[in-house]
Length: 220
Image 1: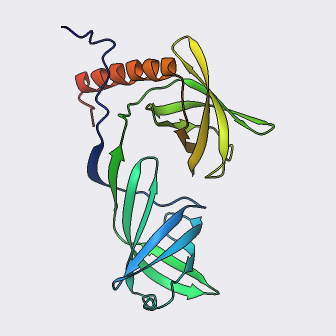
Image 2 (image 1 turned 90 degrees about the horizontal axis):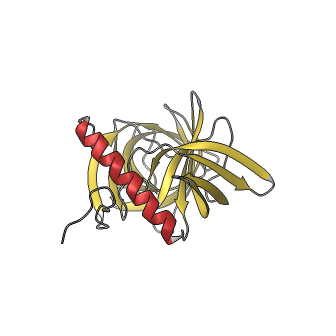
């Protein structure tokens, strides 16, 4: 039995690797702080290249947070995987923890679906608002998309119309990340249940993009 390479799908096994990068959590993300055999949950209130501001809730019986100049590890997750980054404590004031990133972050990528750079048009429906954009990369489980200067808050549930091939699909999504940049903003969208026909078409696009990336020496 032969398989048509134009329509065969990549395997659905989990994919995991660890890479150094320069990521930071987005505003609204919930992160885990780890230090001296203790851990706590914190919500990110502000995130810039130099400073992170978090509202931390220390569990009863935990050790005190490191003093100014001390170090701790910050862990958070999004559609791209689990991220870790060491930080230096700048101070704790009025319950707000100020941290400075110390060194690169490490991303542990674990995905049920393969992702590839695929650019297609999409429209995001957030209540009465309509946001237009295009995908940066795509998988059966979600997409990273450019949306200009619009803002979509993490954890917001939206409906996305995505054009794959010559067909439009309406897909329920959850916003998992919103990252401003010099051209506007990117969002990470996690798909809800999608039509089987859409999943098949996405697999074809992802497979084709992976083949193209390998031939260009860009496969990751």
